[in-house]
Length: 291
Length: 316
Image 1 (cartoon, chains in turn blue, green):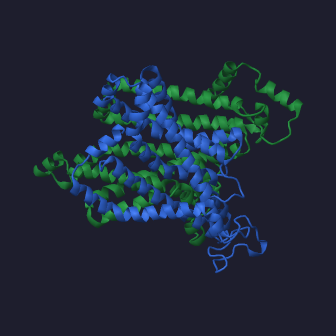
Image 2: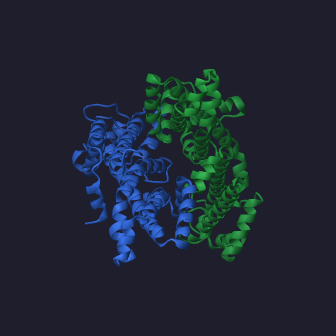
Image 3: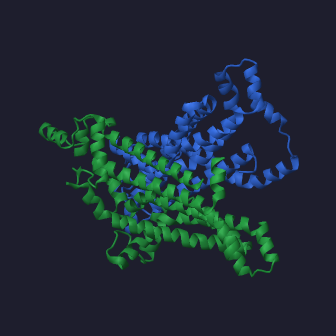
């Protein structure tokens, strides 16, 4: 049994206050949670749900308004917008998930090891995290795209680096506080090795914080990946992706056919709001109301 | 105390700038293939004669440090090399475009700070329904990314209402204001909402503080209390958030310039990245990062200079 579980058992707190919080948060949580769940499910089952092939070009059906055949109409190449939105969910959701998970994993490893080892290693890691924090992530990604060519891989790798400080800095300061606690010195006195303390006790105790940081940065990562595709350096056409669809539809706007851009934009905004609400409520549950 | 803080932050700025410049310069060598082919622009068939010429012209066969020093000192002297895809000097490319970008950033900064602070203050002072509405609307705006906002504004204010042009930067002051209003709005919207929220909560905190109660109890007119006791004390967080917002504009304007077809350095950065024209990308990335970090440093220093308690908290 890890110390986190023991701490959780002892955390009785005021039952009434917690109940009130649960009720208040519940409505928002249900709506946001179902938006996220439905979007994830459509991404997974896109081939089963989508009425058309997302890349099927039909020159005879360009810029169709919404109809029973094409619920959301067609785009400038006669492709079904609904099918493209459904398929687009796959890369739009997967890329930021990879970004936040990589940043979470590497950031936590760096942060815990830095807080545990201290000394010059800690100073080096903190300085590097500070420097990366000072860099605008999008500019970093643009430079890397100029080196290796545009593409989703470049966006994911660079943004993972850019998101390291968001997790690393917070986790490091929490780990510093955590290692001062009596149970750590007790474990050391019992002769438990530093590696084991870090892996089996410190990291599990910091896990709620890491999860909250991953969840709250997911929405921002999604927006960054979409923006990167929007400026033409991320996902390349003809792959369906939300940010790319907003860019792709902008030529249609001037011709009075804004459907593709508007629908893709609305999908992005609604999904990100739901993600942020979910992240906020996760942080309330796992870390208490004070954040 | 304050001087030590300034010295530390300046040292940090210089270190970040140096790290950024080394990282940006080594991009040339980390990138796959011969750097000379990157300087030509990716994709073209390499001509050995041209490659050798570029190697000589760009001193690509020099040791890393020597080449780096040549590039950095060139940058500091305003010589950022040649762009092969634009067939022009990078300095000339940048000076021709930077006016549009600076105008856009300044315009957006005004649109962020003035409405943001006014909205937040009014919401906090009035309270009630107005406060709820402002909070709800700003929360929604904060979730709308710049590129979606650009598209919405083009559709709504340019295509449907025909109030503003959707494309280009215009010339002269009036022309620029007309052309850059929509881009500036798109760039500002989310940040304005953010500044409004921070202002609201800062003013709200001061509103219930003890010194404000005391001031009211002493019979000081409400107008004076608001101006001297509430707004002045709330100005710290507002200022630092506004500074972060303006620094964020520098990175964000690339997206907006691309969306509205504005001939600025952000669009230049993106277009040359797409062409893999590394000379331009290196120069612009270094400028952008240094300005971004410098503004953040300046904001931190001014925040501390305004309120010494911050530096005490920061160093403890």
